[in-house]
Amino acid sequence: MDFQTYLTQRVHNKSRLSPLSVSAHQQTWDIFRGWYTAAYGEQPDPRLLTNYDFTQFRHWCLDVKRYKASTWNLRRSGLVLLCEWLGDPSLMDGVEGMKSTGNAIKWMNENQFHRFAAELERLPKRAVTPCEYERAVRNQALCALMLFAGLRVHEVMALHKSDVT
Image (cartoon, rainbow, N blue to C red; front, side, top):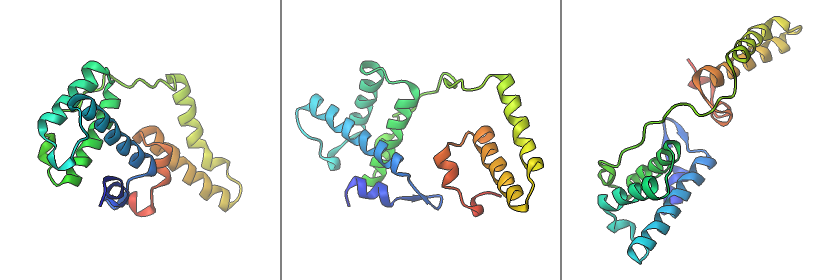
């Protein structure tokens, strides 16, 4: 089974990787192959990869390409899955992630946050019919998951009732 098929069929915590995640991890493999070919003058044979290769790739990503923490951590997660696919997770030993310098996204100031939270609380009170009430409670829960748990839209959309306790 090739790496992309592995990613597509991989199940973790009862769910599959999203198509966006599969694409991102496949892109990591493509970038790694490009780096490896430039560094060693030959295409990589996945069965012959070593911890040294992954360590050098990390140095290239951080020191030459100057990846930010979020980009490197995404690339690293793709490499972890690659090593899992190869059957040797120890290839990533010592290839550390990066600590983020903080949340770069500033999408609401404090006043906007409080107004939004208050509107969430009002949703069910504005409902007229039982159907509107159910929809309002659902929307309130979904928005709260995104706001307070940091879930993204596609992550919330993939949830099932059994996932939420």
